[in-house]
Length: 317
Image (cartoon, rainbow, N blue to C red; front, top):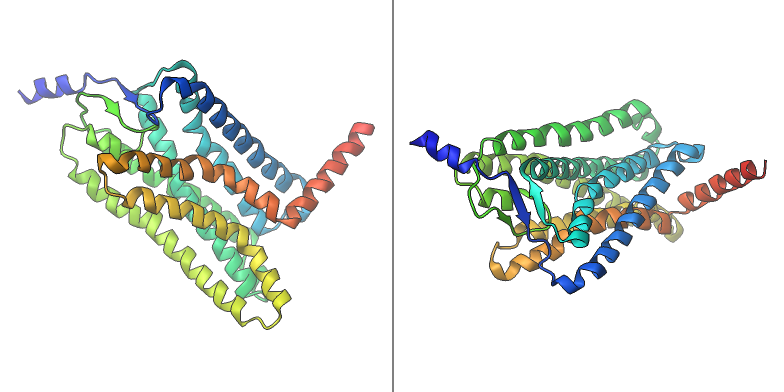
């Protein structure tokens, strides 16, 4: 009887993403809007990566982390937006089981990697502002690579545990996901089997991958703000704050929207609001990263001018 039930439950091979629930007449407009967002996101983050690699003045820990963050944001946005754009263009909202699980794995992995990468960047700013005399000796190239590798490995490997647990689930009809991408909670709702192990693993991994790096980031910025307040010169305070203001803005945007999304009660009334806030940390945060850093960072402006002059020189040759 159990085998027959399992055979019946494994009949689902694809899901239907309801998306944003928008009427069909808005599809072309939304396609154009999100296409522009995607193109600006990719080009902006790739520009930062090129500048960090090409300009020697940016070969320091702060911009090494920024280049990795831009690389991460490029992958992060590419797990969701291409499928979203395709559904706007064709109206086809079907995603295969394998495609859905792959989307969740990469989305979850990149989001987890970003939490630790933001924590590493805040630690870098803590050392630069609070321990300037020890900065060069502590934030060595070796430590930079260790922090980067640790962030990526945490995200990619730890989220594999969730994939292993999700792989044991059986899904039953209706195969409709009330979201615009495959997230864990909507998938969990479609399961016909016991999900207590996943709920326990979600709680533990959320503590490891979200709470821990968030506390580390908060601790770093508490020390940074305390140190900045103690600086007597207003020029010194402004200079110290400007060196971390861009990163602090990204941190607030990323964690602020995540907290709202996952702390809102899952009710029909708030479900659409949940989707709107999800757009902020899944789509708009990768867009905001290059905009914030390029608009507010003088070193990035100078690097862009230097690289542009080099390209102009070689073009004339």
